[in-house]
Amino acid sequence: MSPEPSYLPSIKGKPGVLIDFLIVGGGITGLACALALRRIGHRVIVLERLDHSVAGPLHLIIFLQVSNGGGRLPPNASKILFQWGSRSCFTGVCDDTGDLLGTHIWEEEILREAGGEYLFYHHADLWRLLLRSAIDAGADVRLGVSVTSIDGDDCSVELSEGDVLRADVVVAACLYDSTPAYCRLYSLFVPSQVMLQDHDLVQMCIRPSPPAFLWLGHRASALGNWVGGVNGFMVHVWVSDYPGGSLQADEANWEDLISHCEPRLQRLVRGATFRAFRPVKIVPQLDNWVHHGGRVIMVGQAAHPLPVQLTALGIEDAALFAKLFSHLTSEDQIPAFLHAFQDLREGRCARVLNSERCNLSFRMMPNGPEQEERDSAMRERKLTEQWDQIKELFGYNCRR
Figure 1 (tube, helix red, strand yellow):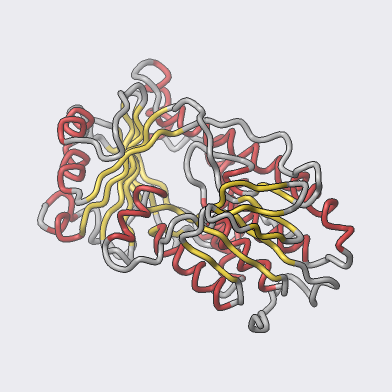
Figure 2 (cartoon, rainbow, N blue to C red):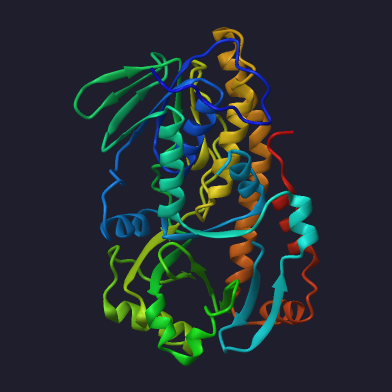
């Protein structure tokens, strides 16, 4: 018997009917869905191919390879986690010469209106938090289990060992695609002791609320921020038109990558204890998230893949999905609820996808008149359109 779940403050009472969910993919979105569904009483099994529960430094390597290590959790997602029971920062903006283009402080008014906080986190820490919370809520999370196929007509999944599992609803929360790369994302981790031994780097991490730093260059950009829990600095570098290679690039690749970078960024790359890269893809949003049988649905990156891993959208998906199924009174409603989920989410996700695509283009402009105009606007803090987009993203409330 699963323990009696606690219920979301925003959802009054229990669903009239409790059903079985199979969630394929135990990443952030899958675990968030499991937690949200258990909190309203539904029965949930999560199937995850990787066994992230390994102890020691190996878990950090796995998460850096799979999920780029660090991340940012904006108010639209943090407020959901706060509601489930689980601070403001400022951003220094620099170009590739090291000249300061400006700073931006997340105003308290913006965060207050958004109802959450802007947080930096390590992917592994957030994953472990959601894993523990989902299991405590009664979800059956099975790590190291490979799914070979999903049968939409039978509402079942086949495992690599040949076993077949069935449920009332199958939720696909994992993504596989062969889309050509738009650019490359290089990720690295710099331990605190490395930065504390460097006069210039130490200034980036000794403040009470260390900021995020954004570097802008010719067809490239980088973002770095302090990450608690693992006591270090995460840096992500986006580069266009750079040759491919293996997951673990050799030293020559890295030296070539940073040869024209601002000195602090060069020292961060050289001081990193782990470095990896992966392709960044621009994948069109799916037209249909729901199988024609009405019992299988795609969520998160499976339904609306993004050029960067946006944890926030997956958490939004989970909250809305659970809210819909809190009103279930008959299994006959399942297909309608799944289609309603897509209807309610696809517009929002399409806007975020477009915003992220524009964001990449904005940050990775080639040197020229447009780039000079961008830098001038940043110095004068005249990026009205960009801040309007941020307010819309932060202020979204998936529970309304």
